[in-house]
Structure formats: structure tokens, C-alpha cells
Picture: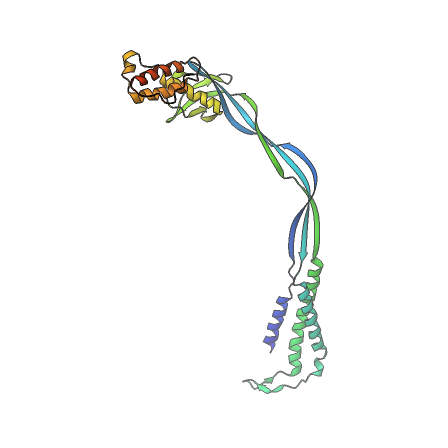
Length: 307
């Protein structure tokens, strides 16, 4: 009987715990202001401008920073925190019920018989508990559980409610980036081929002149002290055209040119076509000469443009 009473008391105690649940939400308010701010500058690397002056390629190398401007719209934001105890009500109800029943049983325990239960006897010859003992065994745990349940329920109800705090938020709506703080670079500039950087040349006040011999091979790019150097599309085209001139010129003289195979003539013609954009290199004249040789062999010059 006492064990069952304790088990019931534990069940009531477990169900009487009022757990507070908190939920937070953010609500955007009115626009406070709109403004621009400058982010910290970052290194933007090296960049080169190429100008062909046959038989050399003049490069102007600059270092710069990356300037970032952010457009910001600042809003007022409300942070609403709602707290509730879903089990506070049931805890309070169970506590009141348990305390009322336990108190009533304890108050009127004298009304129950104190005579042992002669219908039950154990192995030691003891009769079962009297009705008064049974009532007392239930009343005390009910009171012990009811009072804390009432306290927990009241505390849970008091902890519930809503708290509102205000804060400013400033999301970035637009970002603009541009090169800035350009300055002449210094160091050693090297042409990068398929096998890596070739012999470097020192830069003076951001300028360096590359002879045709430095660009005869396949050019992958440029490097300044091991760091890549960027080229705008038109500067990259200037570099490739100059390199084509360096590979194609000079043409073999006389009979050697006539004995050149057709595939090689076609390769030289393509390079001469690219070289024609470099003033003073003679790419247009070479295209005309190679076109004549190809015509003699009955081979039309591909994409010929002698203008």
C-alpha cells in the first residue's frame, strides 16, 4: 500500500513540473537612414599595360588596391521574446487537487477505523493496515506533492509574458568595387612559358621593355616577383600579337622560303595575320608574300585580310 502511494506521488510530482518555453522573433520596423560606407582596402595585385613599339614591347606595370563601397539601409528592428509555461496550468490544477485531497484525508483521518484489516494477514501473522493507516499513507504524499506543484505552477505563470527590445540593423544592399591607389610597381618581371617563368628583367618606375627574343616562345602570362600580373583583354591581345611577330619573323630568305612546307607556310601566315596589328613589324607585307606562295601551290590563304 505504501509503495503504491509513493509511486502515485512520484507520478504527480513529475507531471507538476512547469517548464518555461521561450520563443524569439524579429520584426523589422521603419527605415532610419540610408548611407554609404567604405570597407577596408584589400590588395588588388598587379596589372600591366602593353604597347608594341617594334622590335620591343613596352610594359607599364602598376600595383593597386581594391576599394569597396557598400550601400547600407539601416532599419529599426524589434526583438520580441515570448515566454510561456504550457504545463503551468495543469501543474497548478494538479497541485491544488492533490493538496486539497491530501489535506482533507489528513484532516478527517480520525473518522476512519483504526482496527487492523483482519481480511489480510502476512506470513509473520500480521494483519493488514487499518483504514486510518491507509488514509495517512495517501494523505502525506499528496500534501508533499501538492504544495510544490502549486508553487511551480504559480512561478511558471509569473515567468510567462513578452519582452520587446529594439536594435538597429544595417544590411548591405549594394556593393561597388573599383581599383584605387594605383602606383608604379617595382621588382623583376618575367615572361611565363609552359615550363614556368623565364629570365626576368628589372622594372624601373613601373616600366620595362621586352625585346622580341623574350617573347619568341609560347607566352602563358607575366609574373612580377613570382606573383601573376593581370592584363586587360586589349593588352593581352597586344602581347599575343607581338609574340606572333617574334615567332614568325624573319622569314627564310629566297630558296629556303620556297622550300618551306605548306603546313609551315600556313602556320606562318596565321601568325603574320595576327602580327599585322603591330605597327612597324611588317605583318601585312609578310601576309602578301605568303599568300603568293600559297597561291602558286594552289592553296588559298585562310582568312586573308590585307587591309
